[in-house]
Length: 169
Ligand SMILES: [Zn+2]
Image (cartoon, rainbow, N blue to C red; front, top):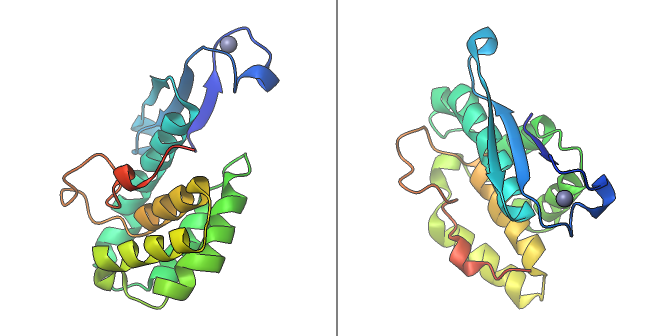
């Protein structure tokens, strides 16, 4: 699991407000031969997104390729959640957003059948209900992580549901 922390001398409770960089430490896939890497970010959100992407990319190679998108979104999302052993409360947010909004909309679809329009419709519905930007962002992340296509088909480093739709919170 990727770890997010700061190297500065500031006490941990002040990390959210101190000006120093967030560091994501993670392992590349490959067991014993894997390497530990680090990447720095100014914004915590960027660090969170990166850590999530690292984990979901690792998982995509192992769990999604062989099944060719035939698994139900609901199953993939639960598997992903169970593997995402985040230390913070983000896991609670992801689970709650999934149960309340994402699964009722697309949980019964096969991964290969989830279209960009389905995601747009879902996000629009969440907005219409007045949900916060951070919950909408969580929905984007869960969908993106759960429905990762085999490597090589993603042309952008950003999740398929464009971040430009997500106002900063
Ligand atoms: Zn600091």
